[in-house]
Image (cartoon, rainbow, N blue to C red; front, side):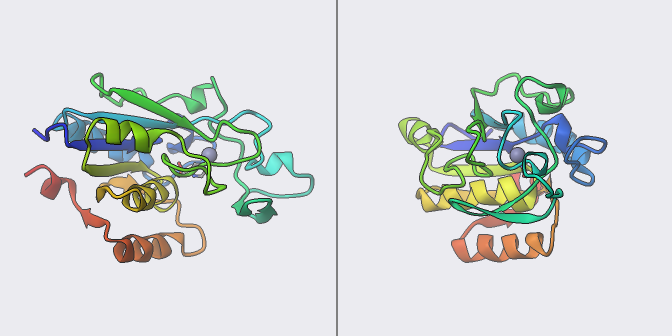
Length: 208
Ligand code: VGL
Ligand code: ZN
């Protein structure tokens, strides 16, 4: 059992990121039993939920003439335009029904401001606005953040990098993640994780 100085951060295990969902991550459903197995070994589990208003600026549908997976410039920088996904209160935004983590202590919702996306569970895409998770983890004397979920190369990677930047030790459990892999984003994410000192391991290694 991993004690309270360790937190398992389960990122965006939501219906819209599953096969058949609005922003399907290939094989995203395969992580659910692995995440359940991991969660059973952690006293402290935190979940995240992508949680957008319907008029969110990251949706291609809200930009005339733009298509999903194109990139645009927003005031805070480059933004990938996504299909409408994880709209607040919808079934698509709900956690996967097979996720079995009744002892999760906190659900961090993110991406709820119309004009700012948030891949990271820690800091929104303007790279300024905190979600509050850093303070929460510090107040609970957490030293090590173990990351899993969807998608490897967006919300999991950004969360892992921001956890490192906040001074936590960070482990990414790779078989408990699946990637979108848009234009080389997975290889880029791995490079950034490695240079930031995020340790990548398997769930088997994590569970010893
Ligand atoms: C995500 C794109 C848009 C993710 C969320 O969870 O990785 N990706 N919103
Ligand atoms: Zn999103």
